[in-house]
Length: 120
Image (cartoon, rainbow, N blue to C red):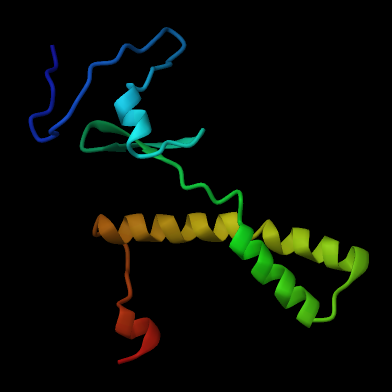
């Protein structure tokens, strides 16, 4: 029988149903501010469930996209069509950045320093 991992300070035992469902203990759900979706991963034989960043709102991104489109001369239906195209690219771009950050943090991906990006 497996026991709790002594390297992890706070743990709770959960039951997995025949439909592969679990109930996340309230404290573990509330503290990280879990949204309705999570990312499930395996690392060193452990199942890791972490909150998925909520990038669906995109309020700041939306305002930036609209500002750029207006300055580019879009209006009316063309503005709406182009806005939808560009907004659809935001989530994949953020997900790619997060994946690159995870790879760099795990030591399996390249990374850049502040100086690399913005200079000395």
